[in-house]
Length: 274
Image (cartoon, rainbow, N blue to C red):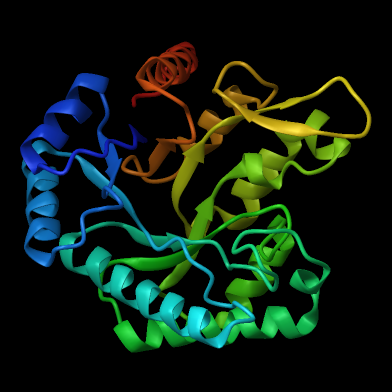
């Protein structure tokens, strides 16, 4: 597998230098790189350095209640999927969105059958407009919108019926209950058993419960929570050796280095090459 993380340099050579300094062999395209020529330069720099471009982000709400916002988001997703395909990234990733004011917020309507159908139609619209030949479009798992568990992801795959639709796995985002929290090893195995053939990229985080009522679960740095990284890496190692595992949501470089150090420690104990 390939370990990576976000580096937001706007210069391809400096970006590669920082990635190599972290010991990363996978990366995400910096979000602020919008110019096509510059995007192409990042893709070429990654190829030259042997770095796998894991994802191009399209973070937006393509199922928004606001039709203008929805149309703008769909256009962004199409543009970013085309970029991923052009520069050799594995996927363009987004969440499904939300049916409320906040683009990634929890709303009851998120779980309706009408919303499921809208997500299916929207993903098809994005993929069919671009017709990518290399990259795929993927939805990141989330706790309060489809796909919120393994079976809802499988249901989406079957309903969308596009080979260019695939899985971006973030298991921490699936841990939304006490059962999944304390039995996350079983959850991880279920993810890879049922979704392994579709997984193109993964996120690396951890999860920790707060000691106070009512239930509150926080993201945290890998190695400081309960996510079973021994099972996670063991399962991930069964996929392509170039499958990326991307650290995210950490506040500073020191935290990213500590997170990477922990993952490398576990991988070493399992004799898994990163």
